[in-house]
Length: 481
Ligand SMILES: [Zn+2]
View 1 (cartoon, rainbow, N blue to C red):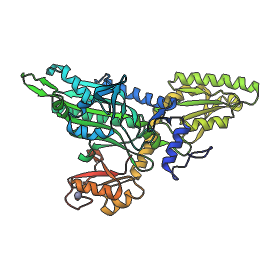
View 2 (cartoon, helix red, strand yellow; view 1 turned 90 degrees about the vertical axis):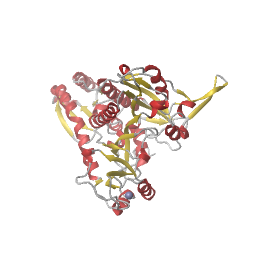
View 3 (spheres, rainbow, N blue to C red; view 1 turned 180 degrees about the vertical axis):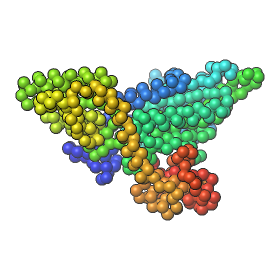
View 4 (cartoon, rainbow, N blue to C red; view 1 turned 60 degrees about the vertical axis):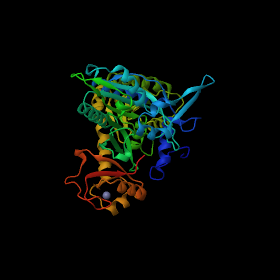
């Protein structure tokens, strides 16, 4: 934790800075239960805005919300071999209920594929029942040893999409559709540029055929996996005997996908944009987008200034913005500025007696700069601002990512970079897991993705960065959360 006044600078200790930003913005707190966090109202409001935007997109693409139980029979997990191997060490298991030993222990859901497939087996009979496009908003429990607020906690909130299709092609297309949906949400709402691509075997979801992911570069040059979309093939369908009758009357297993993002996104948002003053929140996800701070010395000034400030509040709300008027008594304007800056409010309007005379307000942006704005045109300015805001943070984040990406790295560069300043390192990969593992041992860096075409270097690398043999693909390495 930093001192009473401030926040540990990023350059000094990034991890302490991250915690200080969260505490000062009152986004979350540690709970009496080890590894579990309390999401405070300001942090939860950001999550709700994320939920709203994503939920709209899911529904626009034909998905429907449903809810499945928190408890999963332990035997269900064992039905898919890779799945149980991947998740068993992390599960919390209930063995007693109502004071009695349970006949079968219940796992607190670490993810819901198994219980959902058990139900789909019952609901899906023929090709007419397909596709099934489901989403669930829920909490998840994975027993974590080393936890960090929002990034890795024993219990967290997420959405998990689960779809079943008649053909392999449809399922593959769904996986890609969701990957694009996630990416556009992250760019447009979080102002976070992300790389997309496929994970290697060692990094994929337990039980998936292929895992696709979005990866964002944080300000400490570590990568954060912000979302995943899994193509499951027929793995779960076979484990749960989820078959359908084709148009020709034959029985076939369904093809399926699952995909998710979690409250980890709030952590990503913090680490992507915030500064040494506190939270910087992209405007579309800011619970308060504009705060109006009236300034007065005498009672007479107070009445005049407040009347004008209320008019401004009205105008900006009409412009569709989330606005607060901070008319608290007995608190200096400077103290109010400090508080709202720490909470990441994108724009502050200061209105004092002199501004009232000039029919203006002083507009201070959270990312810097102060300009007078005419009081009468606030509504239009607010509307224009809504269109312009997100782009600026995204541009800055994109520039930062590109500055910290190195293409065509040699073995020496990869080692130096990953043990030094970090960032994204693009290089050739032979496809041999031994190389992947050796790099991990030497540098703690992992292959984040085998990048999608638009992110690839042209011409691509010809040799594996580690062994020098022929490269079968380009890979992006980084240390990661
Ligand atoms: Zn190699």
